[in-house]
Amino acid sequence: MKDYIEERAVEIANYIIETKATVRQTAKKFGISKSTVHKDVAERLLYINPNLAAETRKVLDVNKSERHIRGGMATREKYLHKLHPPDES
Image 1 (cartoon, rainbow, N blue to C red):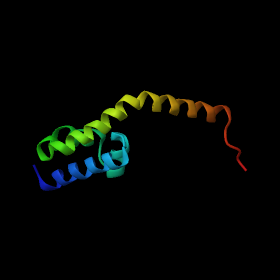
Image 2: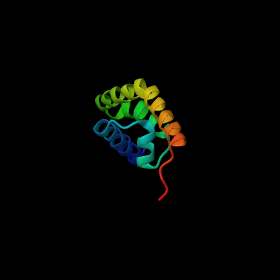
Image 3: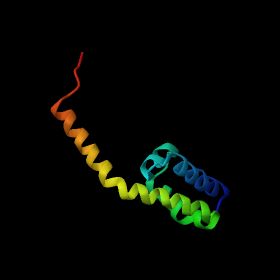
Image 4: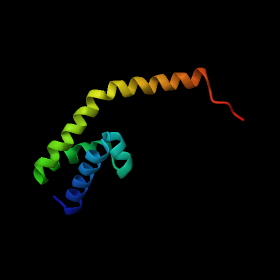
């Protein structure tokens, strides 16, 4: 594995742990795809640093368990803005 990929995987993992970021947020921050983020933290990181991989997995599991709530809140916001658009002054 190339060095820059290993460095990216560790950097991504640290970012997720520090900020409790989702895969989508992390992908946007680093300018890579969601599948690359997932592959880095789910597969590559196990070989590079298993302890860091386990910590990252905990955060991602929490995010996964809460995603239905975030999705519902986003939908609620969407329709609240349609019913009550902001004043255009």
